Image (cartoon, rainbow, N blue to C red; front, side):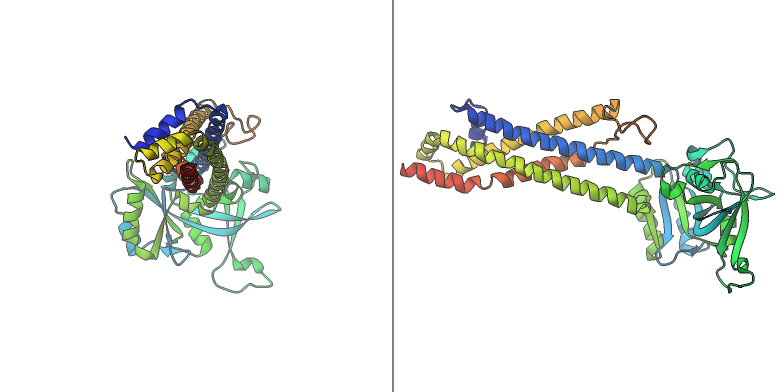
Length: 412
């Protein structure tokens, strides 16, 4: 067994002549335990909200989305796109076209984003899980075109899920002049009816500003026949997402970008990352302050073990060895606090997952009633490594103190 570790362990658990040393050591370990507990719980809450938001987008955003690297639209007959569609890990794919448009219902107007999709979008995205209303999912039939708005858009237009009149969609033409006498001629227009349903993603970005229509109608309105803004892909069950993304990107080359769900909502998840990082740094700073308490207990321990240090040196122990004994003692205090905090934190997170003790508010006010939490192994490793690094850095000053202390004991 390592000699400094053996002695440090004995010093840590042995009864001291001055009880205050035990008290200070316990306070130091408790401070580190609470900081570790707070770290793992806070990171788990951010993970929970991250997973919650990702699940909200899951039924609207595809697993992988191919977009052009340089332009907003691309040809559906592109050779690389056609080749990508034949890859064996792809179960379903659907072209989509998104563009801004003006929607009118009676006297109300609103600028929205129309999303034109193919029939396969219904099976690709799992849109049924988002639909509200007594109607059915339908985008066109032999008689007319249909549009499925978000629930927030219905509220803005004051139309209801089953409006009595059609929505009027207007998109500026790609070419041509605006006639002062007839400004309406500068727009492509179409009327769409509601099939009696609306979608609800629980996100304002979609619910308040999107309407799903057929790809054919979207291409006609935007003068983009034979073009799309994205290729949306559903993978085969069991397919590895990152591997599929890499292989797809290699087939498509630099002309296209392959986006997973996180990258499709980069602005949303970037905020989560930033907030999680700031919380981690803030709590790590508190942890550093808690670790400084260890120095006080180690100095008092050195005073008490002065005779032991002299005896060890007379038996041939080097000064660096004696110094490491006290440093290891400080690291052990930190390790005990860190492990205790992590264990308590994991238990608290598991109980929150199962029973939801901490509530967000009154029932029905939020998407979920209790704080969502999720434990990730990498967070446990990060917290443990952070505690060890911070504690080691905080007890480093004890080395010079111990060296001067040993020299003083020699002179005495």
